[in-house]
Image (cartoon, rainbow, N blue to C red; front, top):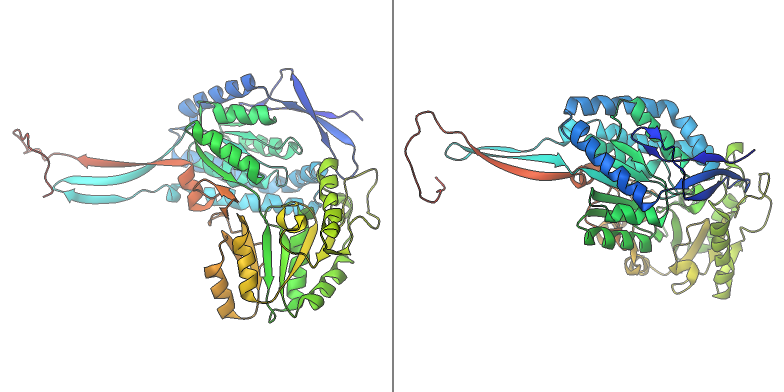
Length: 499
């Protein structure tokens, strides 16, 4: 069976041109090429940006809140009805198990539901009679054309963090998804058209660095939302802001889970396995460093090892617990850390290269892996591996564990497991991380709160979704108004006075 062509969606229709460059798309569970993706040139990106600007000016900038919410509610219903199908596309191109893929769409759906409340979210303030017959009020207005550059690990959820709010706020949007798993975004974009969004308000442009640079340089693009690795996030932020754009660039992570001696170790072991190996560890909120406060490390490692032995790795369509990594190259890179860890002196407790997987063909698999006796300075501790590799670091105290977390250059997510409310409250206050879980291993907030980290995990001032998302996709304006009484008359050339 020949690979399927995957192309751009521009102004509501599939692009019919001929791509100068293409990229292969694979099924990670089998290793087979399933698609050929058209890559956009700079000229095409510029053309789409100009078209999106025209659609914003003519169709969406001044669309009523009633019209916008009608589209949002319709989109929400369509997305909910299609989430199983979109989940299947994610499994086929990303590799995560089907239940996880559908869960990803469901979390994105929560942002669409939040955006349905945009009439309330855009309400401004009003102060009457701040001076005699003078009123002051605030309003929020759309930016224009905004770009969303999303990663491979959540091909539906991450675009849904941004697009519903951007559209609800009155903007036109260009999405540049990952070239590794592009089909889910195309499917979601088609639902926007079906929901009644005017053509040109939402566009999907596939591509690589050339397309990214074109979006960052385009004078028609006012703002950029990005999620990816820290080096690329820093690049996007610096290039975008140098061109006068508003940028929120969410980067990488090295998330720690601190387990105190009084914790429920069964709960902590379950959490470590779920957070370390779910979605094959390919998520920015994965727990990759477990800080065990002695004397619990041996018992905790035993419980984790027992649970790891029950996990089934394989094709995500077969009801397995963990699927493959997204590409062969990424699998090989992650697997290289197993040798790096042992060479640095860590103890390889469970080797993910051993054992069979439930799949056909030559998929990109690495089973769950566990290291013990990991210390700072080792590559398995210092680097964001982005795979199913969990490292146990033995620490002597809460203070030692806290210092390791705060000394880390990343500050995305963290968790503490304890039955001591005082310790938990102290941790949430003292830890220098943007998202904190207390007996919750992956503290991804609900859509009405905002998602984002600190330090090298975020470039820019605004987090994703929630009210920070609404503010990112709008500009504030304050109006001072005076309507003169009909009896007013005469001239007064003096400076206005506060009376």
